[in-house]
Image (cartoon, rainbow, N blue to C red; front, side, top):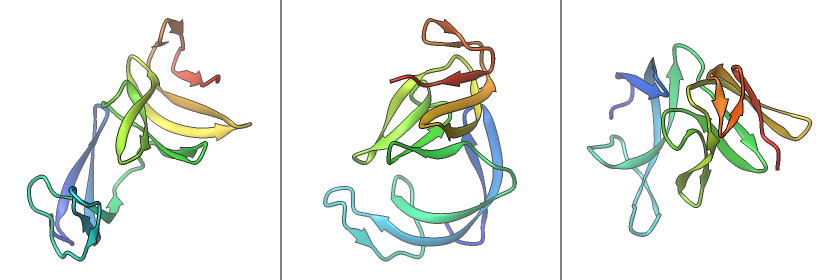
Length: 125
């Protein structure tokens, strides 16, 4: 990946055009060390700034990064360097927010786990 070059970012069943603005560093997957870099090659992991043409679903919930997408049941949390399912929704998640300390997901889905959701779901601990 090269700064300034356009890319397609896939999240859920959406594809969002965007540009890699700046590469901050790449991550040595064996030591988790941050390594200075100007580019990323195939299978390298890095931290960067992206400029997207439309928003994608990200928020923080209980001090964890949460994202909507096609991985891990359509809602996942980033923990210890990996994505873990936070629940299962049977369709796309377009927005995430926290209201009264509860995670709320909105999108195009009908069920969450065994419950009817009708395009909106609230997490209960």
